[in-house]
Length: 624
Ligand SMILES: Nc1ncnc2c1ncn2[C@@H]1O[C@H](COP(=O)(O)OP(=O)(O)OP(=O)(O)O)[C@@H](O)[C@H]1O
Ligand SMILES: [Mg+2]
Image (cartoon, rainbow, N blue to C red):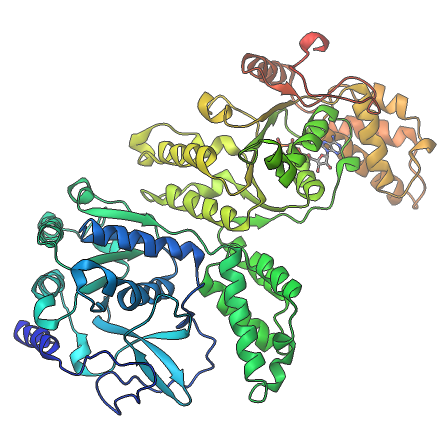
C-alpha cells in the first residue's frame, strides 16, 4: 500500500512528465512506455471503441453541459448514467476536441483522470488504430469524425493510488494546471457511494468536498470534477450550490443505429478476416432500423453484450428475435413486462365509448396532428372501475391497435424498501419508456404507487414518486402514452388524474355488452354463439363482470368436456354461473360509482347495442 509520501511523489511525477506532448495522428507511438497502451487483442467491437461524431446524441447533451460548466467555472458536475464507459469516452473527447478552444485552457487539451475505488486515479486518453498499433490522439479538429478508442494510459506515472478521501481530494487540489501546461478533468466513478445518504459518510468529508469544489470554482481554474453514478443523485444541501446535476437519458434510436452501423461497417471493411460475419456486413438499412427498435430501452453496454451474444449464438447474425428474447428476460428481472398484444377492438365486448376515444386519439400520434397545430403527443389514459371489467384487456388492445410497443409494470414492483429506491426504480422505468418511445407505459394497480403519504414510514417515497411522475407527464415530449389501471383512486391526487386526457370508469357490463362478451368467449372455443340462447345467459348474469363471464364459459365447456366430451348446453352455463357468482358486493360497487361520479370520469360502457356508433361522454348514472 502506498504511503502519503509515495502518493505525493506520484503527483510530482505526473506534473513533471515531459512525454505527454500532443501526438499527432500518424506519428508512430512511443514504443513500450509512456503513452503506448497494451496492444488491443480482442475484436474491436467492445465499448471502448467510440465513433467520435455521432456516438450518442443523448450524450451530445453532455458536451453542451460540460461546456456550460466550464464557462461558468463550475467545478462540480454530477452525472447520472449507467453508461460509464461512454461517459468517460465522451469526457476524453471533450478534453481533446473542445477544451483547447475554451479561453481558460489556452489551446491545450485537458488531461482526464478517472478514479475507481479499486484502481485509484488512472489517466485516460484517446487512440486511433493504425494497423497493429494504437496511436495516441491529442489534437482533433471540430469536424474530426474518426472512430477512436478510449483507454487508460500505461506507465506507473499515469496511475495514482488513493487509499482514502484525503488522497483523492489532495490529488485534485494539488494538481497544478500551469506546471503541467494542461487543465484536467477528474472523473469519480460510483461516487454516489461517497455522497448523499451513504451511512459511512462523515460530515467532515462532505465539508472537504464543498471546500474543494468551491475553491476550485473560485480560482477559475481549468479543473473540473465529474461525479458519475448509475443512479439518481441525492445531493446533500451542503453541496447543492457547487454541483450541477446532469441526468443523461438512455440512448435513443439515432444512437443505437450509429452503434449498429459501426459494427456493420467494421465487418464490411474486414470481411476477409471475419468471413462468418457476412450476414452483419450485408445488413440493409431497414434491417438495421428494425434491430435498433428491438434494442430500444437497453443501455449501450447491455446492447453490445446482447449483440455479441447474438453473433455467437445465431451463426454470426444480429438476430432480432434473439435480442428481443434477451431484452424481455433482462426487463423481467427489473419487474418490467414487454406487452405481447394478442387482441384488437373486436375482442373487447362493449366498452364502445372507450374504444371510440382510443380510435380518435390514435391519430394524435401522426405528423398530420402536428401539422394541424398540436404541439405534443397525448399524455395518457386513466382507467379505473370495478375489477374484471376489461381495463388491462383494453391496455393491451391499445398496443395492438395503435401498433406501438408496450411496457407493463405493476406499481407494487416499484416500491423499494430502501430510502430513494422507489424513486430510482420509477426513474429507470421512465427512461426506459422514453427510449422506447413512441410507446405505451402501462401501470397496473397504479394506486399502489402513491398509496402511502406517510413520509415517516416510506422515507417520503410516495411523494417522490408522485413528483417524478407529475413532472414526467407534464414535460416529456417523447411520445410515451401513460396508461393507468386501478380500482381505487382515492389515494390519487387530483393534479395527477388531470394530466390524463382520457379518464374512464369501467362499470359492470350492461346486458348488450354481456351478450358481446359471451359471443367473444364462446367463439374462442371455435363454436358458433348462435347455437346458444345468449339472451337467456345474459338475463342470468346481471352483476357479472367480463372476467366472470369468461370464467363461466370456460367452466361450462370444462364440465361438458369432462362428461365424455359432449357439447355444453345452456344448463351447463347456468350451473357455472352459480359456481362463479357476481363480481363484487353492491356496497363496493356503489362506492366506486360514487367516487367516479365525484371525479367526473367518462363512462367506458354504454348500455346500448354495441353496433351503435358511440362517443365518450360524462357518466350516465341513471341506469344504476
Ligand atoms: N369487455 C370485455 N370483453 C371481453 N372480455 C373481457 C371484457 N372484460 C373482461 N374480459 C375478460 O376478463 C379478463 C379480465 O379482464 P381485465 O384483466 O382486463 O380486468 P381488469 O378490469 O383489469 O381487472 P382488475 O381490476 O382486477 O385488474 C380479460 O382477460 C378478458 O378475457
Ligand atoms: Mg387489471
